[in-house]
Image 1 (spheres, helix red, strand yellow):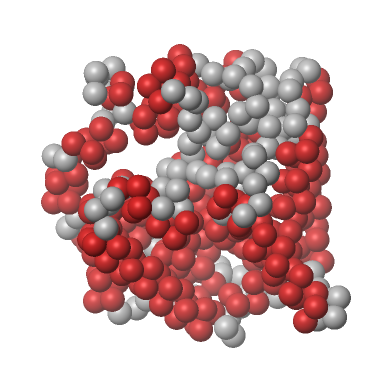
Image 2 (cartoon, rainbow, N blue to C red; image 1 turned 180 degrees about the horizontal axis):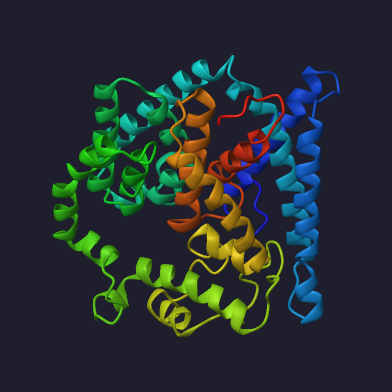
Length: 372
């Protein structure tokens, strides 16, 4: 495995996979890869935003890792190319077959994971399931696939089996991020029926609140002695404090793409407390959840983009239009993006972000019928 020092082994493997996809396609298509004009515009705009994010480091004389920036810029554009080649599988003519494959992969991975958890007692081994350093990272990267498979599935019994597998994996691991997917399963349509099924999960919420592991993570009393030792809670709070530090220090345009964590200029008392407990800083490069990383690196432009996304998302969620294949895809992508933004994060190079880019390239494409 190639190790560049500034990316996790999973990110390295993901980037290498994207590169292999492009190389294989170039060989198969004899050096030709089709890129729609609409996608070219989007990629160009995003690259301009990425390059302009370096303004702050130069203006404020901040530490700048140019090699890290260039490597990540190339890797992100390779991911764009890979995303565009996957797009046809989500067009109307192929989306049913894609949904079946997604369902098979989702169910298989959950069943294998459950067997793995029940037979392997070593917590370290469980956490390294399928090469992920944490179960929460597995949940993060699988969220789009899980949501798409669940939304597209019309058989109610299969849906309930799917939720049961998620609950069993989340409880036996234990892992809160996996269980946080469940509310998103019911956001396909806001109506009485979805609310009723969601209320049936209240006994699970009571169980979680009575279990020490989940108590620490669900607690909002930061001042309590127990929560002061809860690294997951502290890291989450640290992510928000990084965002506030960006505003307080006047870095309104962020500190630059992939420049987070180079120095401790944004560190707060929480960051030093984490260092005292863990012996080192934690999540200083990925921000704990993806929104904190985006805000720290790109500043207020992310807020503007997020407002536009939320406006479009709420309108789509409350619309009374028929659930077409495209609308199901959009809802699955949007809800997975919410999970990635505010629950957990692991940088830019993972399947969760890949799916978000898939959604970005798909949306407003003239060859796709408007879901509305």
